[in-house]
Length: 249
Length: 249
Image 1 (cartoon, each protein chain N blue to C red):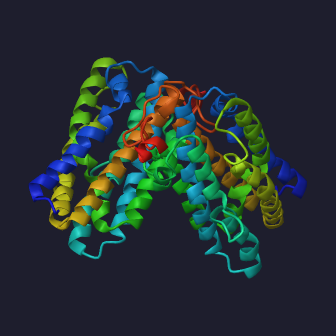
Image 2 (cartoon, rainbow over the protein chains, first blue to last red):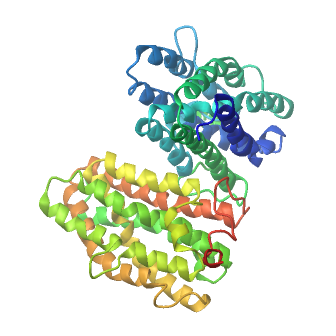
């Protein structure tokens, strides 16, 4: 049976309450100050791959949208990540964080050493948005509904627990707190407007579940490689490499 | 510099020696009898997803091949997995293994409970074969060069260590020992014939590395979910569900 607008929104929010990656123990470790410098680096390096795919994902979406209005509304997402003449953009901000934790930003931007499982998950997101219905593509972006809380916790936890954390290195997260709300308000309203049958509501909910899997599996891979058992798969970043100091020497 | 045929073949074999998933500790655990029944089930369930994608991967390849000769040479791979009037095929044999370890084959075939990381890796393989050059697609199949050893070890280890193992439940692996050599001889010769520049040799080697990542990351995901730390991600199979007995009751 087709759910009412408010019931369907509650269903989407419940998916976040049960499956969003703020529930993954890696975030407690990170925000609580329990990460070693190398574990922080591994997170920054792998999460860069996700940042790198997001504007490609948004371009894949826009390449399928025939409405100039919808493309115009979506375009700011790419600007937020790639930058404009006034705004350095999220990807450069992320590389500033990489530098702050001691990584060579050129090494990070090369995407060498990224865990294969991180690549498979992020690439699956780009393909999902390219292959599925527009409704599913928009719905898969709605994990941003749950992001402000994790970003606020992260800023607070990193500032309290790590020397590298300051306004400059954490500017990515502060900017996302400003940018994400307008995107997610638009995306949520669009999904609620367009998911007007049970079949479409089920598809949109499944798309959001898919996206929570994309995020969760990145942290599982990080945990396995760098926390427990700490077995780095072939090709994965090896602590001690890709550092800023090595570049200077 | 373009390598000689024999040097290039040695380079491909070296990739297997360094990165093939027979080096992953999950296989020692499995073949040595150290897996609990639920760990064996988790392996069978997740590996089914890989089996399920292989003929789709081969069809994606054939959909791009313009030569009837090459398609004809490739077609037996789909027959080996999906079956013919005389041969039940590898997928049904795998479901017989599932039944032997106590899983409901209908549950396994539904692919519910498969780890998201397994899906991302296997789906990445299908997409790779769909998107890359034919040379890279064929090169990515060459992990079969390294498979006979692991299949022989597996048959021997499973028979010795687990009650479920017998000729019927292990028929998948025995058949692969017969089928794989003709496929891999064809694929290897094709790659050696067509990788006639350094650029193509590098691309073929990278394709084989990609495929070793697809296999390795599946075992990493299995390890994280069911061995250590044994944290099952949201949506992953929960031991005690999907069993044959539950179906009968």
